[in-house]
Length: 113
Length: 114
Image 1: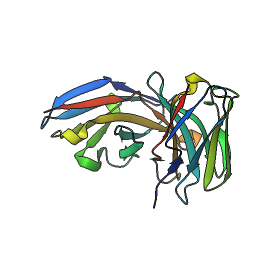
Image 2: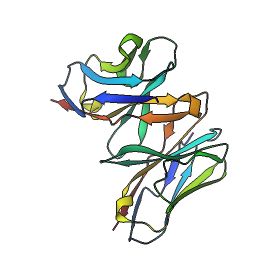
Image 3: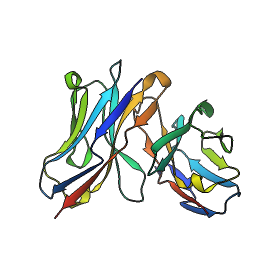
Image 4: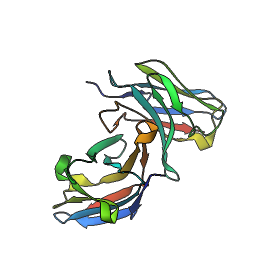
């Protein structure tokens, strides 16, 4: 089991550019979560999916952020246009209802300059 | 609403000393509680979880936590600290009424003195 796989590990982009973060959950996991981690705000849940359907996107900061899960093995988080305040580490995690706990990916460190 | 509060953003102990990281929860129903560890530049890793079975939960790397309903606490302990335990530790609660959503505390950074 390769775990939750995120790409890229690091992303540096200029303000105003579109950024796409990618996540491959563990096979068989039917929940997928996107978190953002910053020094100021800690770990924030942005959105989560169950069986590829978005369940709760109340944590998505604004319309510039969007997330999709076109199939059980792939999800994207897109920021368009990006701003310096979006700089953070973005984590993807997956789980099953029975596992009671997530498996996290290694994260994508996003820097918007 | 369910939540967790971690007491102390930074804890420093000597190598070989007892590690105690404090977490208090707020929940109107029996909670599911977790401790995660994050090493520098890595994702979070599950240390242990409480899901209403035994109140003393043993996890990886010699850590354990005790669920105390009367104190609404779920403190993390380890008898003897190792240098490799230096990391950020997060207490978390699952809001199972919202289908597996987990809310994390603000984290406690553990430093180990030689």
